[in-house]
Amino acid sequence: MKKFLEWLKGLFGGEIDLAIKDHRASFLFDNGGTRVMNLLAHNISEAQVNGVVNRCVGNGDKVIYLYIGYNNGDGAGTTSFYVNDQFNGAIDSNKLNLMKNRIKNIQKKLKVIGWIFADDNGSKVNFKDTAALKKCTEVAIDSFNEYISEYVVALEANEYLSSSQVNELASLIKSKTKKLVGCHQTSGRYDYSASSVIDKHYHQYGFNKSNGYIQSETIKVKNALSKPVIGAEYDLSSDTPAAKARGTAVIAGGGSGTGNGRN
Image: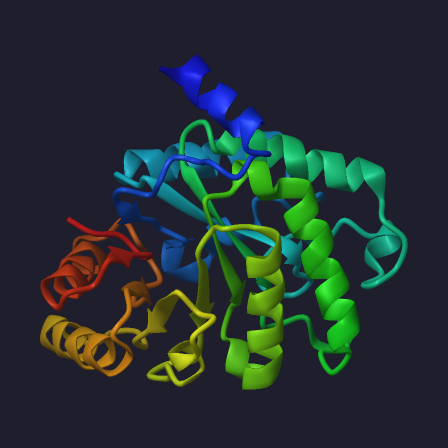
């Protein structure tokens, strides 16, 4: 069966991938001190990567969130395929290959959802330069698509991107792959995800919310959008009983998956 699936991938240019049947991720551990999304950073060791991946698997995960475009500020390490990490500069083939090899190995254990941009890049990225954002997105898709199951445009997108920019970037991704594209916003926000080019909404609830609030909020957002809602951010320590109970509340509210642990 595995050889047959790989033959199909080759026949259709890498567009066929196993669907995510159980969207279960843990992208934060240790009160936010461990950020799983940073595992493609070139200044994080292979031992660290393997340790975090095994921790995710041990927490029951089937999916992992990874930055695949640019991150120089959100947590430890720098995710970048640019020379000297200069955004929109020359491509560093060694960094690009490191990222590709890590994704290839990680996806053997966990389905990868690629997040293009992070929210804490500060002056490193001119987010008004949409052409540069598109160029970075294209490099990421062209380089990693065969190992990635789905995409998210950005973490907390409304902090630094306009809704029209998100639509442009999502449309670009969809022009290059048939894979689903999601959007994530700041706590309580989901307006960008109403766009027809966004397939899934990744919801941020805020931390230390009650299970009842999380369940009712999921119902509200799902009804408003009429599309799949992933409960993506609700706890800083995804392996605690409280986090898993919150994740279970997401599913009870009709959520299609979770990002911070679940029973």
